[in-house]
Length: 398
Image (cartoon, rainbow, N blue to C red; front, side, top):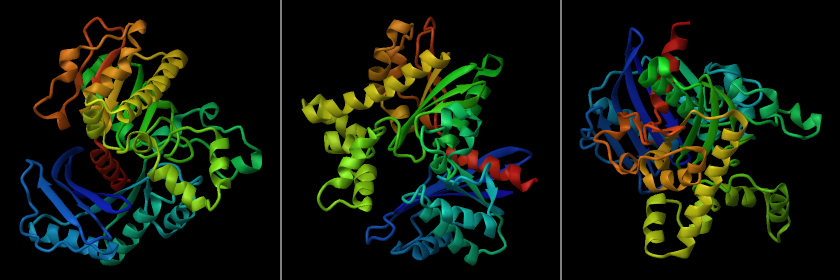
């Protein structure tokens, strides 16, 4: 069976295909079509060996989602790759009524349309892509895989907001996100550790979006993101947790609207607001050159992640700390900065291992703490697409 995985963004489509047989998944290709809606559309397309497969595609047109999907389909067809037997979509928010990953039916689509109010910057693109591709390929089964499902094991005390019941019954609660990434970390750690799989894990998914999740026996019990992916720790362009009064103040400013404040909190806050850019590599370069704004941005970022990890250590205990995501996997300075203030708890980083660049970081589970560290520290790749493919394979069998 061939499973296509699609991860739509506001101006991009990430895609990959897996061959599944007897419960085993094999990657065939992956790529990204970026710049949708602009004249600067770009297609990157590689096979599992890293070989470029986009050279023969020709003109990349993606002025709309319809054109983008046409370009994507043409690229797949010209490469002689197999057609998909099933498609899995990464969807950020399911809304209050859907639990678990879902076969996409008209009823599920209606629920997802209602859920757009919870994730207006994430869900609409996924829905548009689903509906467009259902018209183009009507006979292919499609599945929605949600970033929230892994967190459905959180107890009520960790999900409830102290708000009036009328608001809570509308579905306003902590959902948590990055669940597919966290689940992939748990799967990889189980495979790597075997019988020694740690009972208490804190997972720091640090990328353009960031969250910290506490797991016991491989199940989520707490996480920093809440009703939307805007809350929690400081992120690339999102502020993380704020005093609600800050939002009220912003709404009362002259000329402010809900849309303008929402745009600020999602696109112009976080590292970008403090350091001028949201690229951690650029911030590190500027900080090393003495840029005070960049130095402040990296300190605020690492401090917010440290507070979340420290809170989970105090509440649940932590045997293993895992870093994943673009920053978590690729920025040893952030790992060092975050872990430095945990040394008093017996967490000892192996500086050489932390700074070493593995030959194949995308497929490596590696320990970066010393052998006598009371809390083990690992760097684990986020394999969200593979997790989606696995769930799709499971649902196809039932």
